[in-house]
Amino acid sequence: MAIAPVTAAVFPKTPPGAKVFRSSAARFFGWAWMVFAAANLADIIWRGHDAASVVAATVMLLGCGVAYVGALRPRIVADEEGVRLHNLLRDVEVPWRGVERLEGGDAVYVHAGGRRFRAFVLQISPRNRARFEAKARRQERKLPDHVADHVQGRTHTDYAVEQLREMAGQRSRGAKDGATEPTVTWAWPAVVAVAAPAAAFVIALLIALL
Image (cartoon, rainbow, N blue to C red):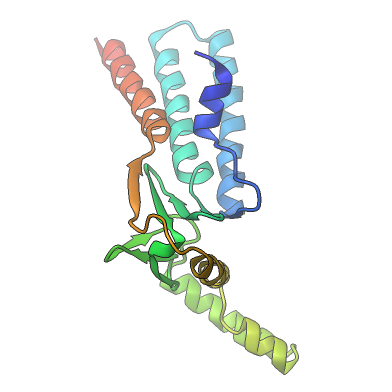
């Protein structure tokens, strides 16, 4: 199997001019785990020659799959055609003409086709949101009034929703025809990234226990 097609499937290229919303912190920890796992796998290949080493190797690979699915893959992509939510194991694609409403709060929500789709990335818990708003109120005293009114209580989730609403307004006015229904599909590279090492772990563990 060629490496280039596999890489393109796992990390697809972003269309030119598209806006991408993702968590920098999650990506940092995801890549940190990848480096950690690669170093440990190299050590296992060099020194390990028993069943326990095989089990440890499958654990490292399973961790890489989880890091990819939970930290590196999730993102929101908005381009000329519409908005796509790349969640853990599924992708949601909504054409701009099909976007009924964009909602913020604890996460980014896209309403389309009578359904509400939640983005996995840019989520914020009610506790963290309250903490952020309290911090913003303290900082407002140091800012000019017109600046304070603009940033008051806004999180990264709110900023993303604001930009998506602006894009939706511009694109939907210009599009007079085309699809309107949302499309939900399984992200098979993500499914395989978790299922394959999980199956390998179970097999290796059973062999080690026998």
